[in-house]
Image (cartoon, rainbow, N blue to C red; front, side, top):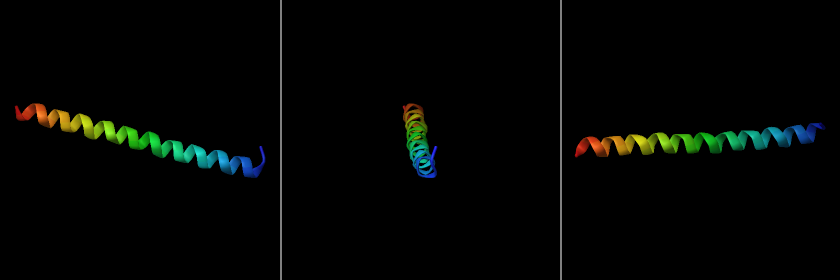
Length: 41
């Protein structure tokens, strides 16, 4: 693997990790909001 390919691969991996982290955070907030809403009833 050339240095250019390695750099591109690491950049794609980093952006993919940010997307997965964002989705995970979204689900955490979603479940928290649902829990708070159910406790209010």
